[in-house]
Image 1 (cartoon, rainbow, N blue to C red):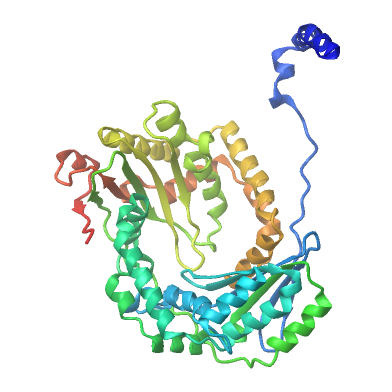
Image 2 (tube, rainbow, N blue to C red; image 1 turned 90 degrees about the vertical axis):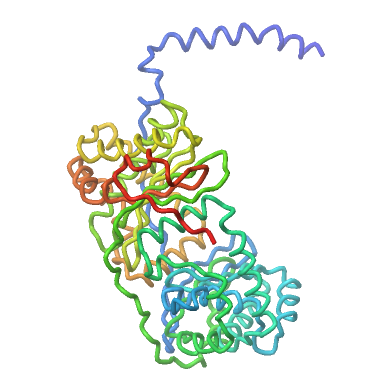
Length: 475
């Protein structure tokens, strides 16, 4: 008790001494901005690559910190191969690989086996690939690879599970327009890509049209070891793993794999203002246009430009103008989705109250025009480049993320020095580069505008943006 009283009496004196000693420094000397650090040194983690005789690509990263193993298998097939009348086929295929049983295991037996192993097993499909993910105890690696082998080589495609998956997808379709963020993004993609596969999404009738025979044929055409990548990280012995790969995968013969049909983009539809009227307290605003692919050398300058526009959070111009200065939205963003095979979209957006919609749209367009016409300051440029370079390091915090990133870079034919040269290419971006790419890839006059909320499509005020106004059919 005495010590506590003594400490209480001495605390104000100690605080006063600390403040006086701090006051002896000038404001500029005490500023954290004046701190200096040694240059950041970082090397991209190395992944062991192996190519089996049957063409299977293996990516390995041993890590013995925890007795766990993670496995990712990626098949070279995705939604891009779907016929328009069966949009959703790839998603159903991925779900049924996981849920439809395989080899000697019925769907229920597989679920029970995975539960007993305390293993997580998931599958999903994107535009160009189907990905299977397994997370398990290191002691169960043998059984996990056996199950994965059976799923990839002998899936059952159980008819009962197929119907359950289709009904679940149809229920999601019934509810999806309740989410304004999801609805607005779909409208924008449809406005930019039209009837191209990138502009489509599963509908009731397209999901209903998918039959078991479609899944069997898709699997027969694309599930071959020479169209497969497997990445493994965690607590495994490479010599033991070699034996398991020989046991479960090496007798799988390679096959003829059809090249993914990637239809070129047609002419981009004329920009319009799209309205989806819903009784909501906030209106979702999206502006977007077709962007660029990974093969475009401008992507590095675009990343810097986008950071300054709306990708840098509170360091971005959109956030400053619309949130910090005027309080018109909680968050404002912009992003360029750099396309892996085809040009991805540029998207800028926010949510705001209905009476502020016109003002926010005008501010967003004005900020983009300023990016096109006024050179960025040296201070802005320095901040953007350093932020992008420093954040790059945190891409490699998780060992398995490094494995899957390496797999995707190989699958999508990125340059061999993409990771090692990324920071230097960002550091080389100049003010002139930023203005040049803004003028090339950021044009409000070519952008589609999407509004989801309490908006009347017949409101004459919407015509002030110089685009035809169209009501989106939500049925």
